[in-house]
Image (cartoon, rainbow, N blue to C red; front, side):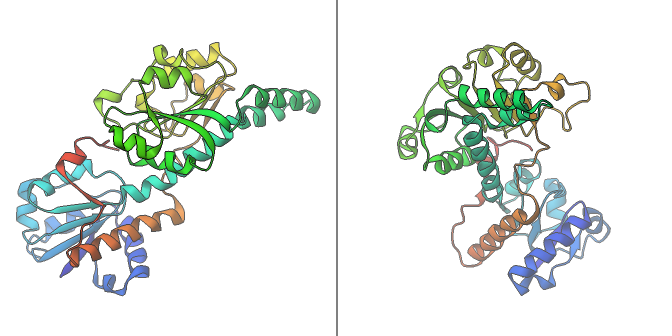
Length: 336
């Protein structure tokens, strides 16, 4: 069984190689390659059965797959969405496994931490307390927290209840919160098992104290969160975006934040990353920006590799893996 590591950037491949070998010495024989290596040596990898990859997996056409990888059985992608490269492989009968589930865990953890802190008014309170005249800042900071609902009986809205949204709901269970979700694909049975109410998007924005976006980046969701929805929010509500920046109309968000000083926006993603220098969101005191850090970083990336190693073992043993994807699944996924 011949295995290779394939990426656009050899540095990424070497990092993946080191992590794979920490899990199992069978990966010691893997070599790190780029697409150029494959194209320059078209006969050299025809016996390759398994490819491991991570961010920057090269793209191949169906014709190239037939030419370079006639023996290929499966790809194990130790990162998130595979939509940008997987379709030709799947059409050729190559199985594709992704660590998207593992990558979603830190996103969900990050969102939950923001939800809990937002309900306490932490973000605006912390910024207000940094006022140069300490006693004014202290009083103003306390006021922000007193305006918020707190975490006892607050209503939280989850927009998009797929893998990450469901994980957020699960992690919120220890708190005494009412959770509403908007997800047109969520079955009644699944909503019941999660103990959530599946309601309209308008209802989520009208009644929730904190709203967290987890929609996929597909044409139907881009610009979905606009002024019409944002204006329905409570005047002290918070919107969190760890999904995709294109889903929120930023000019509309800026407008509502300017009009309602006690509202709050926590954005880990924006339509342009980094946010364009001219964006007024930089100096909105009720807008808080982070540089797309909710996904797997540092040692968290090892969890994605661990999931792919397990998927590889499951494949060898003829077991089903929850990490396997299909053409039907990727049709509903984001390309990012």
